[in-house]
Amino acid sequence: MIGFLLGWICAIVLIAGGPLPAPFSGLIGQGHIANTATPAKLRDQFAVFWEVWDLVDAQFYQRDKLDQTRMIRGAINGMLSSLEDPYTVYQEPNLAAQTNDHLQGKLGGIGTYLRVSDGHAFLHKPFKNGPAAQAGLQNDDEIMAVDEQLVATIIAGLDPNEASVQLASKLRGPEGSTVVLRIQRASETSQREVSLVRRDIVVPSVEALMLERRVAYIRITEFKGNTTAEFDEALRSLLLQQPAGLILDLRNNPGGLLSGAQETLGRFYTGVALYEIDYQGQETQLERCV
Image (cartoon, rainbow, N blue to C red):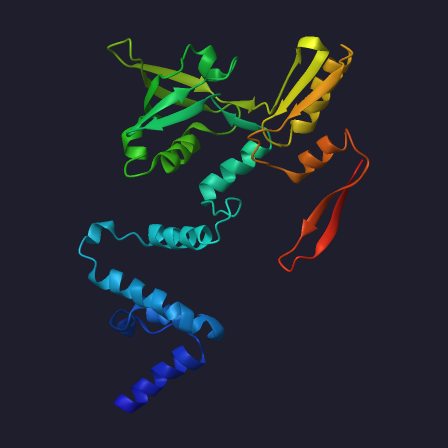
């Protein structure tokens, strides 16, 4: 009976690659089971990872801090940080969705940045003519609750970046929908409730002005879906003033949509200007600028 049972387990796990029956998975350890599903050529390297996973899962003394989702996220971030490449990152679904919205240059919200510090959340630089500013909200007003849910509960245990992501997901929503904030202003003793109707907020990415000696200046903060249209409008306005020269400021620009960079470059250059180099060092013509 014992021999038959062991043979059956080996056939499931080692040969068929299937999951181990529940009564045995806890005994052997989740990590060992997971390692059997790892490609054979990587199994030896991953064995130590799953051994550590099983030890932590079985013996870590602060059981309330065992969060497998956070452990997996930490493992992914650790793997990517070992590449020492600031442009290779992993984003959780919430943050990835917000990044995609941001890169479109328009999002449904109340029109403000957020600042999270020491477990508190504040409005930061409300956009001119946005719902928050039009309702009289000001920079550094503290957000105490969103739709009667306490901010302290929403961001409990999160680092400032994660807290901002979670809170932003509560504040954003479809255009025309309503969100109710409870606000505390430092100069006031009582809190106030403010009902805001979300709007599609255009987040600008281009700044333009004419400097001394008729030098035109355009700054692009990042390349988003609306960058080309903004850039063309700014350039037309400056060219009407017949500038003697032009400064295109890309300092601290983190990048963004490749199409926006291509279209902007195409305003100054015709021909091949963008290339791609793959992991084997092969250089390939990527796009032409027009």
